[in-house]
Image (cartoon, rainbow, N blue to C red; front, side, top):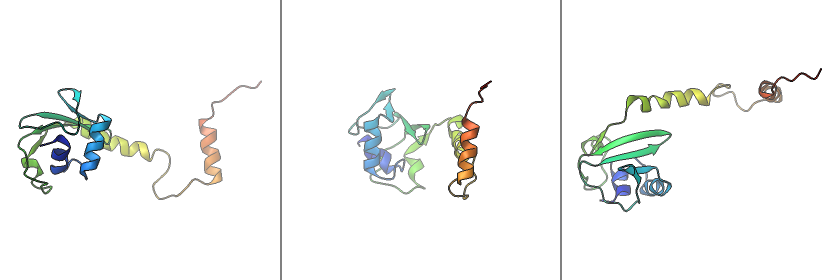
Length: 126
């Protein structure tokens, strides 16, 4: 089975075209080498997937006959991703609402000036 089809079948990607695009961009690696979307996948191979700024490590257990449900996806893959990689998602959430609370809308003119004043470095004109 092609690697893009496998990643789509085990629900790593929502569509097969997104999986193909990830292969073209170099987000999918086998044996530390970028792979094309047409690369054949067999059992007990290790795949590294870079998705949403997280490096997933997946071991192929078996080849599914077609796309499987989310509950059955673990029968065909084994997630070997370290916990440190998965904890990055919580850090990314904190980085996004760094200075504005969610739901407060666009910054006002006063907020914009305060942000600009904060980022300007203090200078001594005297």
